[in-house]
Length: 160
Image 1: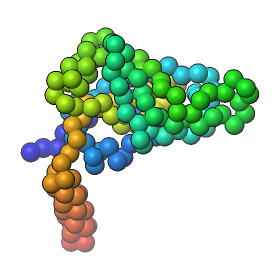
Image 2 (image 1 turned 180 degrees about the vertical axis):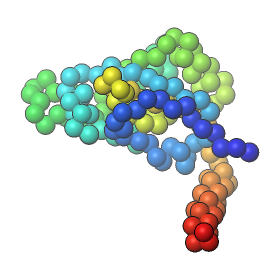
Image 3 (image 1 turned 135 degrees about the vertical axis):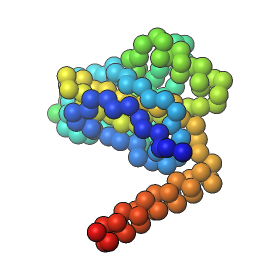
Image 4 (image 1 turned 90 degrees about the vertical axis):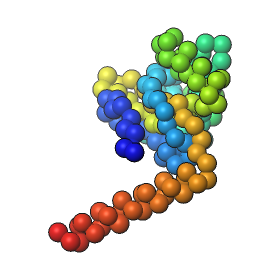
């Protein structure tokens, strides 16, 4: 079976990646969402701060919310600085939200953030994936496949 290739969104500066998610989940579908951020959050992101490692997205009442993403307070911010782990609204088309809602409710899937980046226009974007959790044997198969590819590349490099 061929490996699933995610769609390539135009990313000019990647701020944070959820690398663990590729190991823990099997991705089905990818979406690009905008983030409703305050000014100090954008400034913190421009400094390269921010983490989506333990975060997830929640679909409720026709809205998608990013939960548990950490954008640290802006160092030069004043008393109007933001809360680092506040829930953030994600901006998606209604059709995409409905697709996510049905996948999460019917099929037992979850919405996982994959990467946080600035696009070519300088807007902060979040790449989301509808994913299903992997079982232990699936994780072992992933490790085995990755090791085999590494060994294969090593053999080809040494041979020729």
